[in-house]
Length: 449
Image: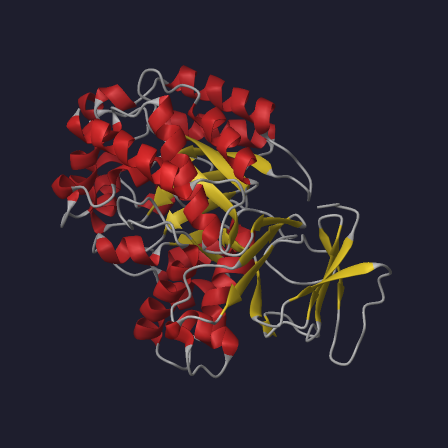
């Protein structure tokens, strides 16, 4: 595809934008024009793509994941467990992760996300057994092959069981090693500006697997390197109790004491914040990644999304790791978030458009990319196009509502930076059958030990 060629996404069945009834024109990786009802493009020499069978969304943005966990889906030893015992069952398996297995796990996760309409994803990789020191580099290479926009977080754990933490010694690193590699991957891979395809953030895993020293040093390094910060927080009541016992304060107080309560930070889960803490998060412009499926599967609770937004907190969506969600489908996550929050707040507070907003504009705020997540002139040409030609959609009325209510799960077309990354429901050049075969073989090898 010639990046200088203007493309008119013409006459969509529906589009999540105002004043774009006849579609949008993209050129040079950006949306250059919205075409309103009864109008023709003002841009010269456009090539039209007929979108008459498509519902057009801003590309969905995934704000929390653990790609490597596609290798431990539905693991019997971890079924029907809450977070802490779930982790303890999985750490020994994750300790056997190899570079080859990681590459396959990452490729499966990214491919599944792409096919669900995701145009940008984060990942939180925090297990570094011996031999996996270049995990972030492996992820960058996989994203480049697929054409997916990414914000990869250099995760870390340095508080093992011998220090009062949960993870075994085999998956943690020392603070100096973590900080040195954090600086390395930012220098090597982090791109700046609105056209960035690869960015890096720093992400100590959680209060129960990281020392206070590392939390503070990471915040200082992120400030120095001007990159974002990410961690799990307030996911379970067990975590709250752990913080109170270990640090003699609640998780948000601990976060603030470590220098993390600011606009650079976005947090995964955020279920157990009280009203005062929500106000503090809003004032600090710290965002939250809501992981509806994971929270339900682990029985962790429900993020109070509407109270958060009332307090000024930006909310995005994350599929979370496949071992707690068991899928990497962001469009399905939209539906799950809609249903969970509708059940909590009622029909007057939560609509299908709220759920779509969380996955687009809200998620863009989490990752610090205001040029993403919205169909408007000047924004990035990241788009997800869905057809409504499956049985699940037969008889639908409102096409946008149908995507959420009828359970859309696979995009027909996905555009990233003006280039088609999914065509006719497939990723060009990807042999899915071969990927499944190799990924399954790697999974069996890891489980066998």
